[in-house]
Image (tube, rainbow, N blue to C red):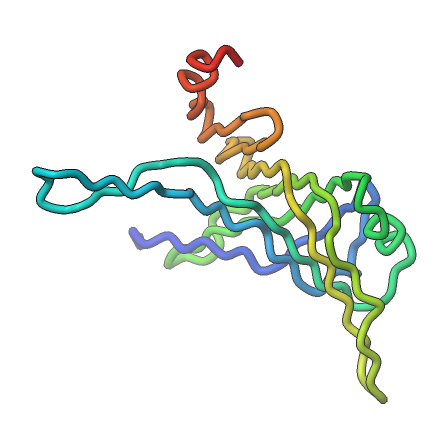
Length: 173
């Protein structure tokens, strides 16, 4: 039996404010979690080091395969947050074939900061890409919470570990 396991995630479905948009999104670029790092250098140190100083702004992009009024209505207001769910099936393969399929779900909350009216070309499907400023992101795989970030509530969890527990206590929050 093969010891190598390969995970594949090749398809997903998008929900906007709880509405199933099956077949309407062509591509989703989920937020990239970037740790801000502060450099520290001092006399007597042989080099410099970087330490965690926060999380960079989060962004989500969705490319739609056509003009959908319900998407544009949600994207048109910069004052109303939208909830996005991206649901996928994570498949695991080994030498015998597919051995497991588990749910993988990304939860995103944010406000749209870009929504195009599209590029229209003859005999070509128009494309529409929306960009969202994200304030909340969470990833759950097979019931296991991988991470949760809420920048307005000072939440940063990895699995069940609260990464900001001591910080919040220290600042009285």
